[in-house]
Picture 1: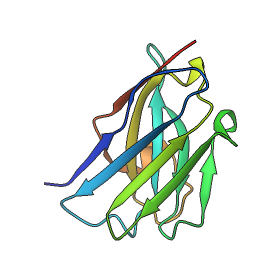
Picture 2: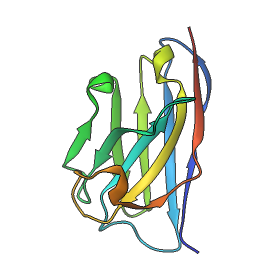
Picture 3: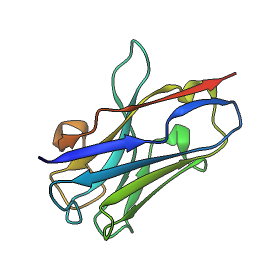
Length: 124
């Protein structure tokens, strides 16, 4: 069974840091672009960050640039999202996703595997 499992969410204060991890199982994701999306309560799921298969090609939504860093370890079949200087507006369920493409450029509907999500709550 192919799975993506997120971990690392929690409740933090504004200005704190969190590190989200996503572990793949059932198949290798080393040839897939990977990414993170988030869904605030009552809103649409939105793109946060992505990384190409080699780890060089990364992209971020403007609101997290300079605060979040995406990385991956193909040997461990994992990707991480380091989130620093968290803000109240970062509060959301964060989802790990794998793209059908190898690059770090893809849209939500081009992701064929999703995790169940992990909740990040930032208290103001």
